[in-house]
Image 1 (cartoon, rainbow, N blue to C red):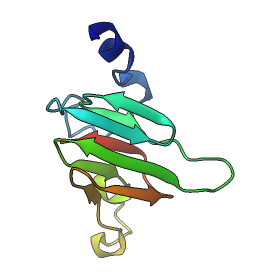
Image 2 (image 1 turned 180 degrees about the vertical axis):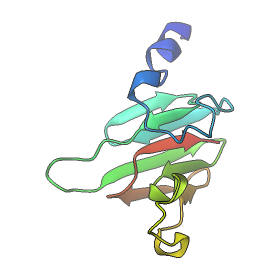
Image 3 (image 1 turned 90 degrees about the horizontal axis):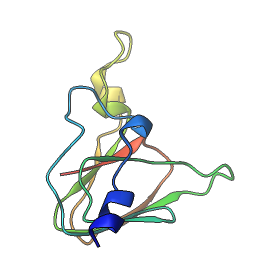
Length: 109
């Protein structure tokens, strides 16, 4: 079982996380499903890949922690764009699911 958790751990080289947040987070019990990939006892940040055909990506939070879908609002604002024009971050509580077209990654905790 430990080997499976190691294999499903997020790859730091594929992350698109905000540098102000640490790459590791609290360990969550349960499952995090992003598209067709399921992570066991996730922690940290995972990539959110968008489908080439334009269909939304399914994100299912079956963990013990809330998750945040990292979007443009989680990154520093350009000087020309007012902060009110950016969409709010999408947070899923345990047991929630969504389909999304936006976002760069999913952060646990």
